[in-house]
Structures are given as structure tokens and as C-alpha cells.
Image 1 (cartoon, helix red, strand yellow):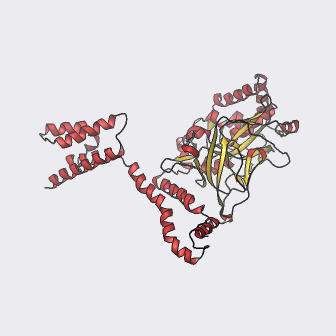
Image 2: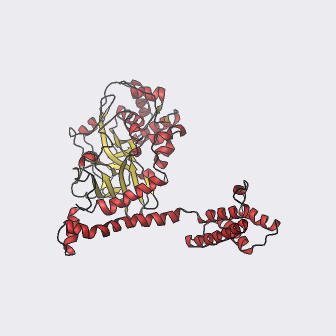
Image 3: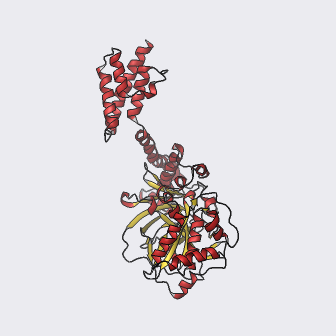
Length: 470
């Protein structure tokens, strides 16, 4: 195809695994590997804490490892008939062993080639390119309607032997609770009050009593520790529960208006089935220990000494790279050979051949790069602080580049210094007064006004610079 780039199937990497044990996700979040770009319809900008991207359900626990739900038990979850908050979004995503993370909870019809499987897991066959574009809908809710039968309840309450202290704690808290929701609240309150800590470097807790070690001795862990200990306590009290892995949150690119999921956003949480309400309830026990994880992201949730372990994609170069990648995907990758042949036929050039390639390639490349160029030049202007940049030029020109006190001089002080030294310059005084007013005003003036002020400030700085050299 015209837009062929090296994206063969074997290059599509897998992020989340179909097994989980403490350390698997905390190792994954140290990677900056790209997962998906997302745009919401109608300019919606949801809260980061609403963005739970479910991928894999972990239901079988052997005492040390969780295994993905398989066909031994057929889960027939059904979304609520009238979701309160339904959103539409578009996702460009890399294949991950056929599992596609989808916003909780998927609703409406799915695109061709994509199907909803066990427990709202979205699956698809591998695409030939390794990338695909999907249009999906979701209900931003923490509950999923599901009439779980007796066999399902037995399935989701199974526990292997071990961890007796954790079991006794669960039984005690359950006896003190009148309802399942009250029991859930007591468990979360236990995490809050017992000095648990959120860390990427927890002590090892091997063996079949590892959850007891975590709950009663180390009390330091990552999302897997909290999700699995919470689910074990739910099951010990007779409530069906399961672990869900996926991604939490995403980074928002203000200039291009898209969200980006990376491996560092990998997360694990829990779902508990409430018999009176006949729903699965999403519970994130990690939030009981570190609410900032959901609200501000992984880096802010970690202690300062551990933040360097998470890859940082916030630099100017990283933002430029990510925005360029987004536009490339939007305008180039998704323009496949079928669409190319259809376009060539409509404009009378027949199908794709080398003649049409030579004819349209220059114009097509220019069109593909135009959005990136527009972002680059427009974005740079939006990022510039014209007021402070202009004031710095004026200060440097009036006081001299070698004045060590210049950095601490305000606009009002500079104006006063001019008067004290007998320098009458109404134009400069007016510029400084405008700057000081705008600096402390509730809102800055429009960008066009700032640019005009900057041009006048630069002209004044040149005048004083020329006078100094003379």
C-alpha cells in the first residue's frame, strides 16, 4: 500500500499478561511503551479517575498466582439497560494478543471483527498492520448488572488453603457489617488506618501465606498486593469477587486534544458481586491507600525517591514526538489500500500503480505533514509567554546583562529606578504599567494583544541596547 510503514504483526507487543502475581504490574509500569491514543466525542474531557480501561479478568488463584478467566466458566455479564453517563470515544491501539482495553463499561454494538467476551473483555483477531482504529461507547459507571447463578457464586468464592490471618480478619469484619457494602467499607478503612504504603519496591512476600505477610507485617505494596488481598478477603467472607487488570488514567495532550495510554498506566483493581443488587461493583483498594494514584497518575503517587523508576514522557521532545505520532496515525496509518484504490478510481487514475505513486506522493506527503506543521508553529506561539519574555528583554537592555540584581527587579521597581535617575521615557513607563497590570489581573489579555505588546517591548529594548553600545 501507498502508506506502508513497518508495522508487521510480529512487531505488535503484548503489554498485560494473562497471569498476575505481585511484581508483574509494578515491573510493567517502569516502561514508557505506547499502548493507545484516544479522543472523546464532543470535546469531552473526563476526569482521570473515571478512566478505568479494563482488559483481563483474573479469577483463578492458586495461592501465589492469578490466572485469566477461561471458558471453564461462562460469564454472561450484561450491561445496565439505561446507563447514566454514556460517552463515545475513538481509539487507535496496538494489538495485545487480541485483548483490547476498553473503558468501563463497554456499551452498544461493537465494530466488525471485535466481540465482547467473558466478563466484558473486548477481544479481536490480530490486524494485519498491528494497529487498529475503533469507535466505542462506554457507561461511566462503577456497577455492571449481572444475575450470577449458584455455579457462578461458587466459582468466584473459591480459595486455596493458606493465609489464615487474612481469612480471620475478613470473617471478623463481615460479622461487624450489616450489608456487603458496609463490609467493603470496613475493609477499605482497614487499609487506611493500618499504615499501609504504596510503593514500587515492596519487600518480597513469597509462599502460600504471602498475603498474610503483606497484610500483617510488611504493609507495603503496589496495586497487585491491594487488589489480590482485597479479593481474598471478599471471598473469605462469602462474597464473589475477582481481580481485573488493565490501565488507569491516561496523559492528556492539550494541544492536539487526545489522551494517551502507556505501559506505566497499567493497574489492577477488584470487582465484587453484590447479591441484593445483582451487580458487579468496581472497587479500587489501592485508592484507599493512595487516592492520588487515580486522580493524578502513577508518578505523583510514589514517594519522591521512587519517581525516577517510572519513565517520564512529559518533556517537550516527548510531547512533540507523541503529537507527531498521533497525526501520523490519524492521517497516514489508517489510510489503507482499499481507500487508496477507491480514491484513485474516483479521480480517474485507476487503481494503485507506480505512475499514481509518483503523481500523488509529493502532494500526499505535504498534506500528511500539514497538521503537524500547523501544530508545531501554532503550538510554539501558544507555549510562549510573551509578557514575561518581553519584560526580560526590557530589563536586560535597561539594566545591562551583567547586572546581578536584574532577576529580582519588578516592573514597578524598574519604573521607579527610571524616575530616580532622571530618565523620562513615557513609552517605556506605559509598557511597564501595562505589564504590571496584566501580571496581576484575573485574566491576561488576548494573545494578539500580548504579541503587540511584545513587539513594542522588543523595539524599546533594541533602542536602549543601541544607546548602551553608542
